[in-house]
Image (cartoon, rainbow, N blue to C red; front, side, top):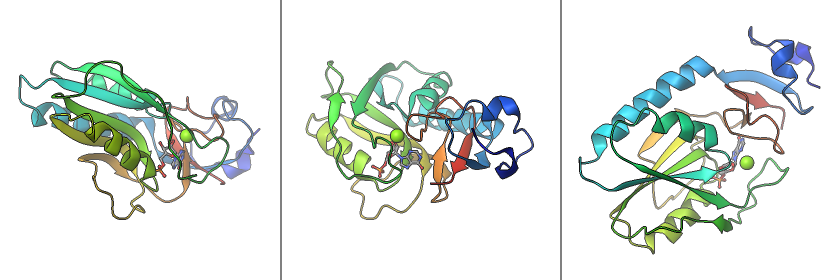
Length: 195
Ligand code: IMP
Ligand code: MG
């Protein structure tokens, strides 16, 4: 159970702390309200970016993007299809292993469609780099990336995300889909953790 003395935001109540898995939360980084406002603005930009008859497939990278996807697509005011990709995760570690394995990818066609890949967070950039490579071989009409958080520590990315929610600190972050050893995904805000 987290130590309440380590929490420094006013909304921290026993109810929030009870959702955690034992690792101490350090501080609130993005509140639920701030996230909702930003996600809505990104969805408006995405809506405006595509031509009316573009065939747009929004692909969420599981598991981390599940809440972000659910909120984002509800503000996109044009026809879309929704699917997911499953890549191997970091397990209980707080560092990137460098290896990305695809466990599920969409059965439907990618060729000729506009693909928007939705990521929770870009850290080393390895995940989007590998996924973009694999998706490009399937010849989409376009491939863009929308990431909620970008740590800006990745260098030489072959593809930069067109939409970024927040330029994140290098701390290890949890909540709003992001986990630490599978804990904390269901927090409605993003917090930093002692890594
Ligand atoms: P990358 O491949 O190093 O860019 O890492 C991307 C993936 O690592 C994300 O999709 C997350 O699952 C995970 N990740 C990276 N940084 C964090 C973090 O601060 N908190 C939680 N998960 C993270
Ligand atoms: Mg993860």
